[in-house]
Image 1: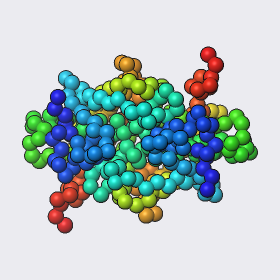
Image 2: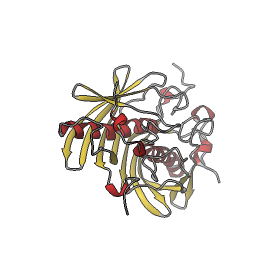
Image 3: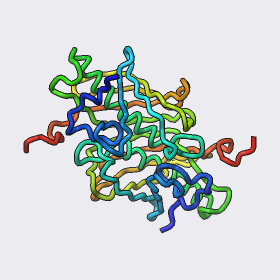
Image 4: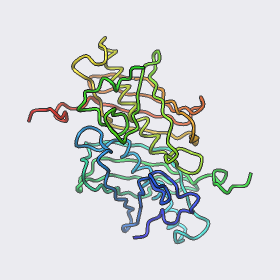
Length: 157
Length: 157
C-alpha cells in the first residue's frame, strides 16, 4: 500500500521514525483508511519498558511520525492534490501530548490511528490513538507545522 | 557519577531508554546536580529528523526516561532515603507533554535538566528542558506514577 512517506522528497526521507532512507530507522508508513490514517508497527524485543510492556519513548515516536505523516496527507487531500505532486508537503512537530492510558503489551503489532482535527494555514492538529489487539492503550495529540523553507536542505541562503 | 537508574532492581533495568541491562538501548543516566537532575546524551547520526536536526521521538524518549528517573530520585530524597535502599522506587509515565521550541541540532551532546514540581502520594510531576550548547530547544512535562505492584515481575498472583 502507498504511504504518505513515499511522497517525501529523498532529501527529507532520512527521519529515524519514518524515513525510508534511514538504515537504522523504524520505517513507519502512514496510509489512508477511509477518513482515518493508520500506521502499523511491531516493536522489537528491545523496545521494552518493564517486562512485558512497550517503552513510552517508542510509543511517543509512533505518535510523532504518525502525526506529521497525517498532517501531510490531510494537507494534500484538503487541496485536492495527490501526494507526490509539487510542492511537497513536509511537516515537523511543534508539540506532542501523550496519555498512556494503560500499559501497552510488547510482542504484538500496534496500530496507530488518527485524523486531522484542524488545518489552518501551515498548522495541522492531529488526534491519534494506539491500539494493541484492538484495545486503545495510548492517546495523543500532535501539533504539526509545515517545515520552514529555510530548513530545507536545498534552501538558498 | 552515580545515576538513579543504578538503583533500579535488575528485573526493572531493561528499559530501552534507561535500562543498564538493555543491549540495544540508549543507556540514559540521570543524576542530581544541586536541586536539579541532569541527563546527558549525544544522539547517534541516525537519530535524525531532517538534515541537521534531531528526531522528535528521540527527544521525547529523553524526556520520558529523564522524567521517571527524576521522579524516583525526588521520591527517595523526599523520604530522606538513599537510592538503592528498599523498597525500590520505580516510576512509569502516565502522560508526557513535549514542546519543540526550535529545531535541536544533531551532532552535539544534549543536556536534559529538570526537577519535580509536585510529589503527591504515588504521583510525581516533573518539568524538564533539553539544551543544546546551552540553548533550550525543547520543554516538557512528565506525569510519573509509581509502578503498580501487580506489574512487578516477581509479583505473586
